[in-house]
Length: 368
Image 1: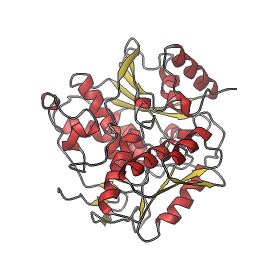
Image 2: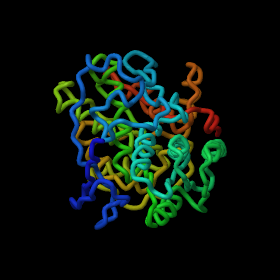
Image 3: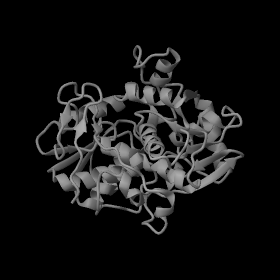
Image 4: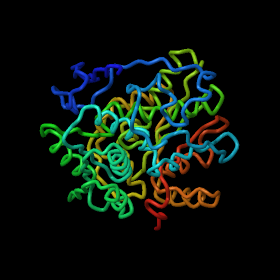
């Protein structure tokens, strides 16, 4: 079996050997990156491969997987001239988080922990729960109070132990991280574990393949903890370095105006978060993250791409959800944020793709 790559801290350079259950930098306690720079396969070589994200085997840090639910290869459909939607709510657990969860479950299976721990506002937790069930791994998911009942039901249905934490999303994360420090625990963090980012990057590899070896002018992504955006940046860098694209698309990051720490930092030209962003109610619960641990990386990725940050109001979210439903697409309220941000023409004549990240059945309609 191909050896696992080492991890390293992007802040201070501390290295963590492959096979370790350490979930963060032992020096600064920050998230880790993977020492892995693959070369994607050319377009013509993809024909006839497995119809899941594992078709991009050269770009994934785990070879010969045994855990899969057929995730990936979601449809790309037009919304209006120049703008298409990628239907990532058609994943096995009905959200894009399956892209990263399958890699975390595969990694955990190889490391053999006594317990898998995750924290989530819902979708990541359901994905981790499903893939741990597939891999027969014991799992506990920490969620904040107020998480959508349908998401809680989905997590428990997979046989996962559910731990509802008093407080907000950050309180759930802190509780999980405390448990993750115990011996023999694998922290399946979609924020701290870099394998998750190497799963989400397949979103862009699929775009590139489905668009015949090119990418749109703008890739629009919702940003809370930034896992889809950072995965997209990884894929763009890989494709560009291999000479498979001749230009890099701009990355547009979308936040709810109610909880927009990254957009606020961007507007001030800062390299990191500024001030304190209070938690506030929003229909876009999945991206309501007041203090994303990878904030510096997210801001840098958007800046280097020539992109920007956009924010959306609660009214924009409601109207976008109904607009998509009128087009036959029933998407959860967080998952419509990108369409809410661009549907009134902010991209101009440029082509763009928005992800529809979660199914409407998870949350129902956003109501005033």
